[in-house]
Length: 395
Ligand SMILES: Cc1ncc(COP(=O)(O)O)c(C=O)c1O
Image 1 (cartoon, rainbow, N blue to C red):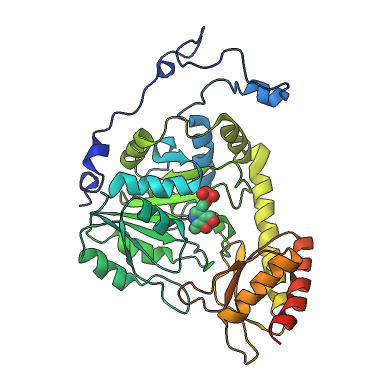
Image 2 (cartoon, rainbow, N blue to C red):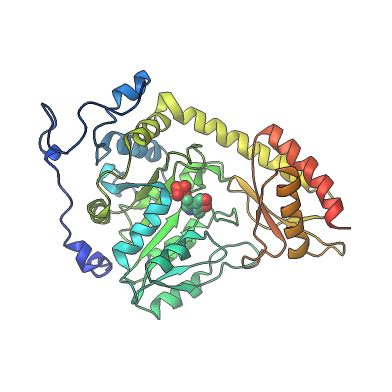
């Protein structure tokens, strides 16, 4: 049986969350939090800003926003969810300053510095290792299988069974920079291993998956069924709100209660909560998000087809489950080349103001550029600029 109390650090298990007078009393003359009761130091405010009471600390719990998020995600239920498993509710959530905060918070919750480890599957998102380094946590690495970029289930299982200091496995699905959805059935095999640690599935790109039933691939509705599952999502990608910094952690209610006790009480600003509530509302944002996703999936195909007509563009080695492509750049002999890819990357950015990402130094990504999918106009310029620059860098 999974024992959460042996994974969460003892100092967190016993943590009393910060409390303020506003938890008990919300109306009247509020002189309890050392705020400026005159209002914000601004010469003018829009009507909407006026309603946000920006001189006051924000709501630490965000229940309305959380309810909207779970209502939306409960609409599409992962095929692996059993009928007996409860739908997710606000108690399963902890909101953070982007999923970057969630990635870090989980490490601080479960890994004792200088003692515990996380497991990652390269090539993967860079923040797991940055947070691990900051927290003085070691990393066990089990590379993604190549080609295909799926997880190596057997190696992951033998690694966690052989090392009881591994407390968290970070899986990115769909992957970055791979753009490949990880098979849910493989993740479930790991969830079912007798092992005291959490499987963290980072679903930053889940809404872009190629699958017909896109959101139903999300594992977030399985957190009441698997107490060792944590799912991360963000409003930075499909919702187009990277600037507001809102990340969502889905987990068992018990883990969510520890995470909520740990977080800075006012980590989600009133401005962020306001925009996030509009974006996740049926009338005000979800339709727009779905249109964005539809646009990106069509545009992704157009960009791929048109770039692949050019000499010097090789295979797309990633999947099509995200808002970017991972493409090989070839030298004059037709081989993927870091030298040519890096030259192209620099030329695109410095002489043409077209900025993509060089990923050639990531495991099994030799010669690769990662290209985000932009608007139709941006895509047309991208293809033309590639045409021009590729010729020059491959001479
Ligand atoms: C896989 C993955 N996880 C998390 C993030 C960070 O998301 P956020 O903007 O919510 O911090 C990114 C951003 O690129 C990402 O690629």
